[in-house]
Length: 552
Image (cartoon, rainbow, N blue to C red; front, side, top):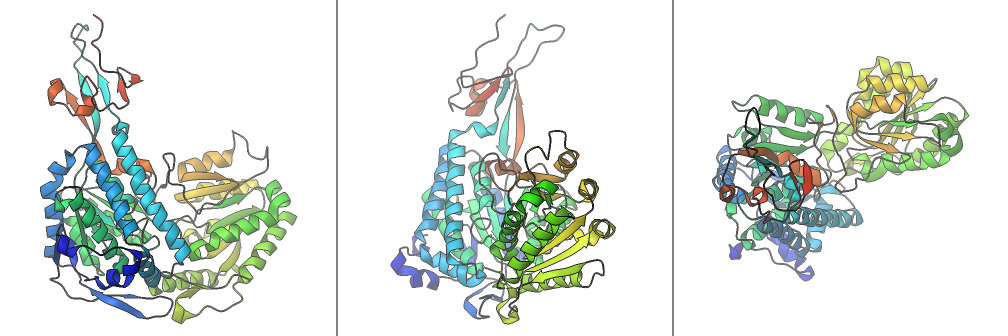
């Protein structure tokens, strides 16, 4: 394998980029049985970037998953320290790619270098955070109920349970986070940390960045001494490649971040299999913001500044973008509307991730412009340049009843587009909240005492969102143990799971219960002496102590 290693060091950027080969990475082998039809374009200039990438064939997709299945049992049984080491090696290898990775990602996505530098930091930090989680070990939620053979009227058996990996996972890279939610993003590192082999479908919008990171992961797998089939990457611009991966019998779960149409299609494919499997799809949402009257009256200018900042962050290409904002009419409403309009007008158009996303954004804006119940308020004064895939910021207005009467107004417009809903009173908030589909987030801006613990609005929002914010903006996600990045459909396919934060590992495990097993045959996390040293639930008490016999 060493002859295929990528050179490293900041002075070797050109050499690293020259190594792009466009083939499938199937364990420790490269394969190119399809046609080299995938080319990356610089969305800002229209330039076709160097490198042709081969469309995977059905046989190649199948081999990737066959390799994963062949090593799944061995990988599942690896010591947790080995998997933690793998994740740290992945982080090290990504960093070793230096500026070459950032440069290629910048050329493929038009994301600015400071943003990509920060995203790389998040990518390696979350890999190391998962390494710490795996190494400490208590995340497996070990539970032990010891036997009581003298219990009447029936003896109590010894029952023990913990989380175990489910097997090969297919990861679809996201377009809007080419590093942090892509080849070595949160889906991949959480699955590898759990002990699941991973097959990644590279995003055709940034195939070069995907291949560079795949090389880093491939090196890390070899250096960790793990079977090569633990990681593979395939390219594909057609829907067929995704279908082959999801329908393959070795695939045990799918992670996806993208559009509602894409996530729903994958979920339908998985459900139609002879043996259905879960698809953990995060598909975005309108992320409503509710501006309470006093907050609006006292902080209209400040809230407007925060709102426009959030609306335009990343050219509006965040799944937590606040697409709908609701406010009660009055002086504060007018001040907020005017302040937003002023800022929107002064917002320069910016290049989106690729021409396809830009075209979809244009169609979404046209839907609002053609709706008789929606009025334009403001747009970027400077015209967008279609040749540079630019999006102009847009701000529209409607009233509460029209919003309720037009379910299509809840459809996400992926980009820097906001819709202001004019409400007569706080009762409109509750009626609209009750009618809204699932969302990743909802935000409430309020002054002290304006929202109580018995708030009907909050009670209505809780079952409809994954994250509730108070006096903040939803864009920008803290990667931490308490983060929940999920929500009811259509935001995601499984509201109980998160795709960001350490709990995202729970998507790729299942509980296994061991009843009556000899101590020496149990996983070390469940043995009496607790050789793993983890926290466990023993006879309803959380402890790190060894299991002691029940008193007779």
